[in-house]
Length: 275
Image (cartoon, rainbow, N blue to C red; front, side, top):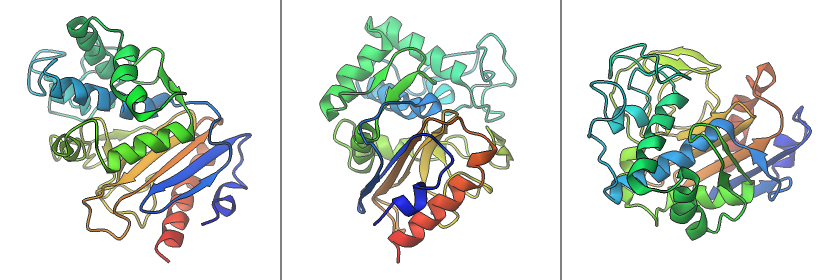
């Protein structure tokens, strides 16, 4: 499959992409480093789930604002505002409020419990075992990572065939938490409902959306304001695309140029893969 026809005309200075898993193809410099911004949350969520398996904390133990749990924080259901943990906009479980502050709250708990900086915890638990030598979380667990398509392809393979976490844990991460919650997907407006897993956005019936029109509702992933995204069609899906993931990194911030281009591109790629 030639990805150049899909990415070659994008209005960006630099882009790199890969399809991995059941299908494979690449485009651009796979070893070029890009800032991930909110795609960081996928790496962080995996580290948080590793902490759950290592009994650092439990999903349903209290964490965050009153009435909130680890599960609320990681699924954007704690009521914490997008950027300020001191600002509580809703009661836990009332609204899906996309929040880096909630991730940072959980990051602080992990650091207190383990005595490790969060970036080091992710390095030791995920990046080194997967050979992700050019990936680092250098600050916030919500938006401060940089990586390459080569490295994120390894992470995508892990999401398709887990080796570091139990498959049951990853299945739970890809399952809607607090079903029925409404909320805003940044850049795409209010979604009713707005399904989200444990750190992983779930496509559901959202439209418009950055994933392709022809991708199944169980597609999970995340995009970043730096012009990045990663999607996964779980291996256990009944869809023809099951076991396939896509990674795209650019150096142009998300904006009007990306909508509807991302959706159109992903739709076209999937059509080619299923042809």
